[in-house]
Length: 627
Figure (cartoon, one colour):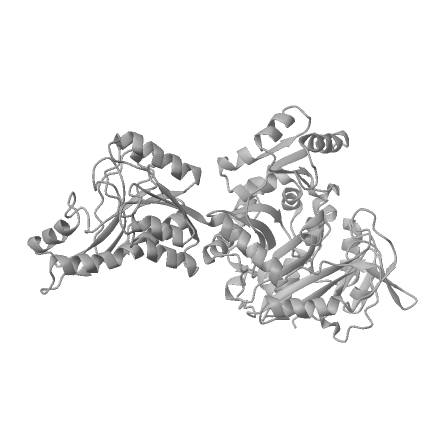
C-alpha cells in the first residue's frame, strides 16, 4: 500500500477502528478547528472528512489553506449536497420536465394541492438532509393524505422547509464514481436495502444491507441501464460545477431507479456512500490509496482501476428497538466468528473486554463469492454467529428476494401486445416462442379476429391468451374497428400488430393507434406496394429484383404508406418461383415482428410515431432495422 499510516479522529472510542488505525483520537468530528488540529498534530497529508456539518462549515477550505490535501467536497459543494432542491437540480441536468415531479414548501400554502397532483405516489423529505428528520413515503409511512399533511406541518412548525417528490417506479441501485475533474472511474453498482424489517417493511433508514452482482452489475439491470447511469454520474459532476462554480474532485454516489425505459436519479451523495464504498473495497483489484492519490493529482486517466467479477452481500446488525427506540450498550459478541475478515464493526465501544453497541448499526458482515447466492450464504452464516439482543434482515440477497426484485422490474418494463388477424397467425408463433424463451419481455394480451373459426384464435386459446371474436360481415368498417379498439383498450395494450388481417382498417382506427399500429408486408416497401399474397412475389420476379423480403411498417390511411420499422431480406435465386419466394419471405415475418417489438421495448416508440402524417420511408440494404 502507498499508505504509511492511518490516522482517525472519532467522536467516541471505537473498538473496531482502534484495531486498524495507527493513531486513533477522540474529539468533536463536527468541529472544523478540531479536525485541523488533529491533522496538523499528526502531520496528515491526505484527509477524508465525512461529517456533513463540518463540510458545510468549510472544513475543506480550512484544511487546504493549511496545506492538507482533502478528498471531500468544499463548502459550496457541501451546501449543495445538503439541500435537496439543489440535489434535484444537479440530478435533472437542467431538464425543465423534472420540476413537475418536485416542489419545496416553506409554508402549507399550495401544499395540499401539490399532494393531490401526485396521486398518492410521493415522498416527504426535509429540505436539509442533515436535519436528522426522517423521510416519509405516502402509503408506507403515512397511511392517508391527512397523515401526510400532518407530517409536513410538523416539519414546517420546526422551521424545516419541506420537499415533496414524486416516487419513480422501478428497482433502485447506486453507483459510486470517482473523478479528478477530467476522467472517471465507476465502481460496480449495488442495491441498498433501506427498510429495517423483512420483506421491505418497517421504518425507512439509510441502509440495512446491500447486494452486488457477480457480473459487476445487478440481475434486474440491462446493460443500457448501467451505461446510462454512468453517463449521468459524469453529467452530475458537470452540473455541480455549473451550480456551484467549483469543479468537484472526489467520490460521488448517485442512487437511481430503473424506470420503464430509462434510469432516473433520485438521490445524491457528494462523498463516499457507506455500502457503495464497502462493496467497492471488497472487489477492488487495486490499492485504494493509489486511487485517492490519482484523483487528487489529476492522474485518474492513467490509473488502472479493475474489479473482481465477484458477488457481494452485506448485512447490518442493529440493537433491538432500532431506529425508533434503540437500546443502548447492547452486547455484541463476535467470539464465535472464526474469520473476522468479513466483520466490520461500526458503532461499538469496548468496556471490560466486551463490545457494546452505542447507537445505530453495530456491525456489518460482508460475504463474497462467485454468485449472489454463494455470497449470501457466507454472509448469513457469519451473521448468525453473533447472538444477543440484536437483529438483522435475513432476506437480504436471498434467492427469493433477488427473484422478486428481478420479476418486479421485468413486469414494469413488459410490453403488452394486441394482435388482430383473420387467418392462421403463423407469424404469431415465433413471437410466442421469443416470449417463452425470455428473449422478448412482452405478453400477448389479446388476440382479436373477425373469423370465429380462425386458427389464430385457436393459437391464442392453446397459449392461454384471451381470444375475442368480433363479427365483421355486413358491418360498417368504422363500427367494426371501434369494437376492435374497445377489446384492445380493455387489455391496455401498448402496440397492435396486424397478423394476417384480411380487412383494410379505417382512418379512424389508424388515428386511434397512430404510431403503434404495425403490419408486415411481404416486400421491401415501397417496392410492390398495394399488392397482396402471391401477386407480390410474382411482381418481384417480373421486375427482375435480385432480393426481396418483408417490411414491418406503420399502418396509416394510405395502404402500405406508413414508415418502415424493420426490413429483412433474402436473395432472389434464378430457380425461385412466386410460391418459393412466398415461403422464404413468410419465414422472415415472425422475426421481423419480434425485432419491431424489441425496438418498442427499448425506446417506447417506433419510427414515424411522432409525425403528423406517416409517410413512405425506404430502408436500403438487407437484414436491418430502420432508425
